[in-house]
Image (cartoon, rainbow, N blue to C red; front, side):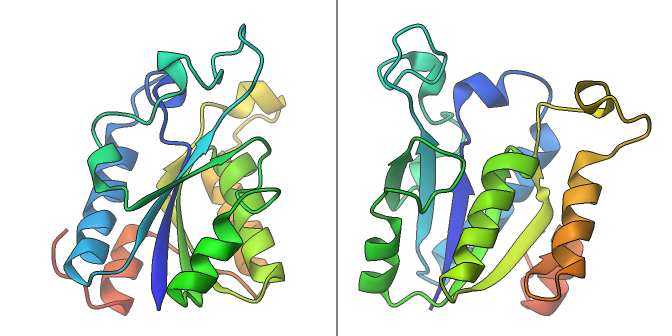
Length: 179
């Protein structure tokens, strides 16, 4: 069975800049999973520090209202990997999931770490590059011309173990018609 991971679609990230294209892509993919009764699992980053924007009780750390209605399961995490010291593995085993689709934020941190951790645990992994986004850019990394999503997608693709697709390729390969 396949499952969709929607990583850190939280107010503090989504409201940082215009992520409308990424949110639309994620929502379209969620519709596909809902139509097939495949699980949509949201991952929420939380912190215990009351001064953090990711503080578990802060509205800034809440799942963004535009997509949270699609969540079948919500897993809370405290590190970039959605697997580290969470119940994600147990949930996936219970659901008999063997193929994970990765979407969400931030591409180069939580999405990438989770994709690699999923592969290490034996899952088939599909990383949907333009259904991820990041608050960071070339200035953050002091690398002129850097496209973070494309860079991460290329690295994962070159690994030859994680399938990297854009939404159009996802629709073609998985015969989805609602774009």
